[in-house]
Length: 337
Image 1 (cartoon, rainbow, N blue to C red):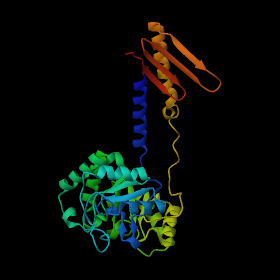
Image 2: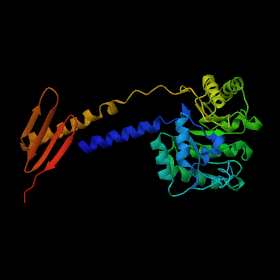
Image 3: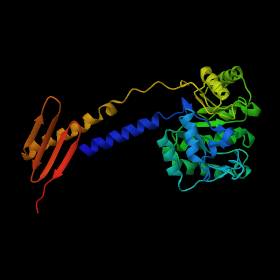
Image 4: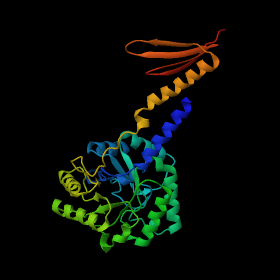
């Protein structure tokens, strides 16, 4: 009875985690030009991972944007090494676990710009990469963005086909990012048709008023939640945070280049499920049932110790003992030699 109840509880809690996975309230700082960092290239072997994590956390981030591959996009990491060539490595599970443990939930960007060696591959090749990334990392990421500036290299039809493929193999949310403006440089809202989220690029040197207007336009035109993902090159600056704040106040549900306020489209807290709230009681009840069955079926003596603060119930027969209290369940076996 005890193992059954524990396993059932774990399965139920895992299901809840998947069902309510989203990007509402997400906070990232993927551009940090003062250090020539772009967190998208975090998984490159030479990236300054510890410093990137520390900088992101110091800026209040809850999420981190990372590439699953790259063929040329980035600040090149400084004068002495190039971070813009990335392909999946065997240690990435460990790297993503480290990010999650640090409090930075990865958002995986599956296709870079400035990478014709990648974006010119066939549709089947793109789907194969998407499938492999989901197979390896789906339990370690909070969501996906199918492509960065998709409209530079793919049609709306291709983009939607890849988003549909992705949504067929994962329950995690999927976003689309285009060049600056609602619908990108083509003004084509069809790029967003299959996506769960719009990752909106605004362009540089915008005012808070312009940010506000673009967020409201994107929500009105697409009917989808909007992540204000790209509006400043240095996410830690006061100017960047002011733009992020304006986006949140206009209705965005997340930011990618810094903000100073916490509220940003977060969903209301879900009420704790009854089986999570009473997990310990369910476990103890299972042990009680097993104990009573043993006592009644086999005549095994039962002991009870109790005071005003705690209790302990146990059974023992032929060297085997089982006891439980408010804080523990303990099985023992006594032998002599």
